[in-house]
Length: 303
Length: 263
Image (cartoon, rainbow over all chains, first blue to last red; front, side, top):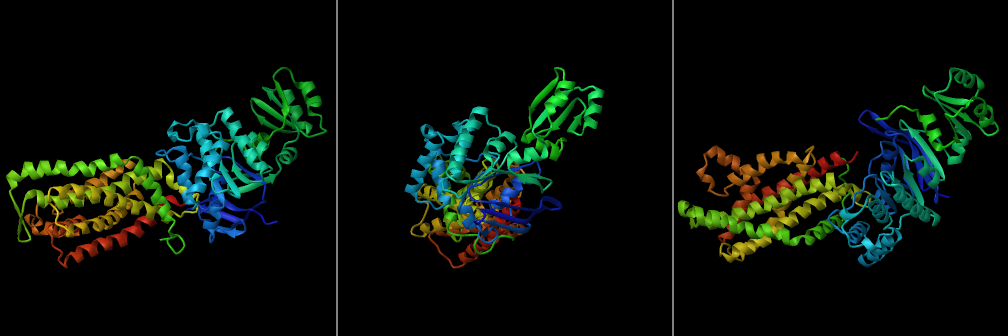
């Protein structure tokens, strides 16, 4: 089967800054692939190259089997893109926004109107069809942009932080719509800062930092391989506990006020550590993607 | 000049023009108001108010009333301002605040097509506004026909010239406030010193040479000839100058916008 995206030694530099440093990856049809990483890791630069906005500096990038440098117009005609910032036409109504956008894809007017109506219904916006976009809430705006990105019946949907800044209700609504699209077989490439979003939507994840790919794989596999299954967070641990954990062989992160201990399946972390050393200031929980993320990319701020 | 080659500009640019036209139509009454009212204001202030002091102006061996003298200037300034302001302030808002260009770039459009469409749109606005204003001043009997009809295609050409210059500034300015600079240093001097409100030969000779560099000078001259019903061959020089400016600034502004937006 031909990959939807195939990047080989893909590189992007801005003056003397290397944003994407020779990455290799593939995305197969029907897959939902998530790009994770701290700010400045190179996620957005990568997807901007994929949707033909940023010219690639080196390497090769094929989308739908076509070379992005040569056949960018065909490629762009077959994908839908939700950029990080909402950018509807504020002068136009919801319906007009979609109709105008359909023009850019050369979709005939009648067909455009039909698709626009269907998509607004799909996104739960049909009752606001003739409203101005300036009257929309953040969640509605996001759903409008999502509807817009589906106008050309894309073979690949690209989402750059689809739910950033939305309230929980709106996030869940967007997720439901995306899951519905996924169930119809649409290939989705997304970036996100929300690990729960990545774990819920994506089949496979790529964790990037400093322009390089650190790890990739299924969310559950990444957690099991890089963190384990169980986690105990101890608040203000005694020096004695600290010493014991250090000599015990458990993976752990020592953050001054907080000691985080990770246990794999079969290591009986909760029994061996929890019962012995935990008074009330302990949190027992399952390992999450966030643990993987922080363990691999560090805890210092990226600004 | 990276990225300005074959395959980057197709007829699809017209789709962006359609977008602007749709928005324009939604507020067409407001768009039509300035070119409708402006000539009344100017003709009242200058043609009636000032002409008592000025009297007639001799131009090309003819005696023109002051109103007849400034009417071509009003038309030319209208063309300049419509295109220049569309491709500075309005294009900047679409580019910077509304991120309209970013959205377009995620479709099968190229940046070159977006910019070309913006400039052609600016020229179209100049054309529409000229049509309205021409209608008004014609009612006062200030335009000779059929020569006056040539003013319409001229407004489109001038629109491309002034629009591309505007787009060049849009590609450079860091913030929208800085458009004050080209307006103050470029548009205002042209407004005043392009043979608009007084004949050029009233200026010292060095200033006349400077005025010959200003594109508006040639536009005013061409329209003035047409308004009095003349079509001398030497108008081609001025016309050629406007074409040259288009040929220069259209690719230049596109390259500057490319540098600004594509990383």
